[in-house]
Image (cartoon, rainbow, N blue to C red; front, side, top):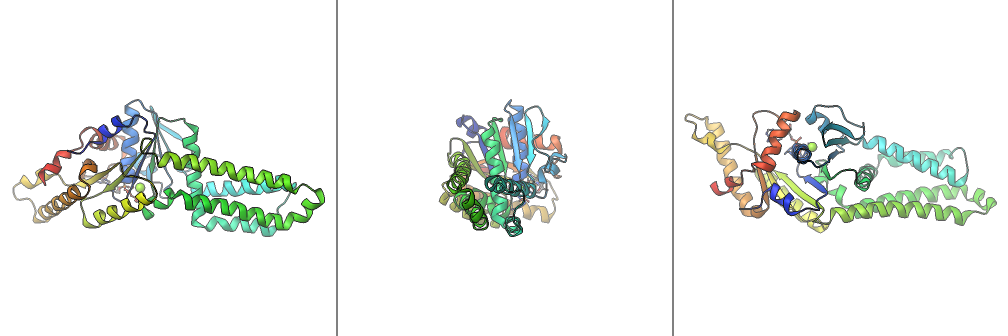
Length: 336
Ligand SMILES: Nc1ncnc2c1ncn2[C@@H]1O[C@H](COP(=O)(O)OP(=O)(O)OP(=O)(O)O)[C@@H](O)[C@H]1O
Ligand SMILES: [Mg+2]
């Protein structure tokens, strides 16, 4: 039998980060919330982090936390839902101020100002901002465990593909610097301080790079980071998971496990006069669970049942946590 989620945690005493990835709507946020809950109950200070503009953590914890910073929900249980738009705006303000400071001017030329604002619409900018927020939280070392609830698109792959994002960010900074330099060169020349300005900017860039390198190192270290894929027993989810695992491997991230979610309890099959509809659904799930066992066998860490309602609110989160860590139902794999 594969090792359970709880065994995995016990075998990784240096675990700092847990990431749930996978196709949209299969249970990443649900598992993230339950994981943060479980750690908090086991006396670990846990932070659950999301950047979902749909405020999904707010939804599952039934508290409005979007853009409100780190919020304590219970003993050892903290959540934060980053408002990436706000973060990008703050970043722009910082760039504006830095340029003003460096060139000792009160107001940016309109063209530079417009240029800086225009970068807000680039998707890489959003990801960089998110990434930066994650790196900041991790560097703060305030928590024992960080749970990153990834956005659905592209499995959050782009969030993790540091190299590209890092480069995009640095490029943007460099470009902004160049534009500014073009406009302000004359002024700087008069003051004769161009080398000093250059040094300041390079210092800034290298500090950003250091921060992101630190984060990438943490993410690609299997001792500190647990990387889990959430799927359901259906064809598309299985295919998608296979593809994603390959993609992640290319990024230097190895799979820590898969969580099979939304599995209909097999005992239903024993109910006399069970509707044909349900019977078929369960048989289908059994068939795909078998495929999951064949394809990801040793990686299955928990099998979570389909609940009769959406798992929301602390009581339901506690229930999911129980299935995820304490009663992972791995014996179901023997029954398919
Ligand atoms: N085991 C389950 N039983 C019943 N409902 C579930 C279960 N797991 C998740 N759900 C419900 O399915 C929906 C999707 O779950 P969740 O939000 O956790 O997925 P997600 O992967 O985070 O989605 P997204 O990709 O949109 O962020 C939610 O409404 C959630 O309450
Ligand atoms: Mg989600």
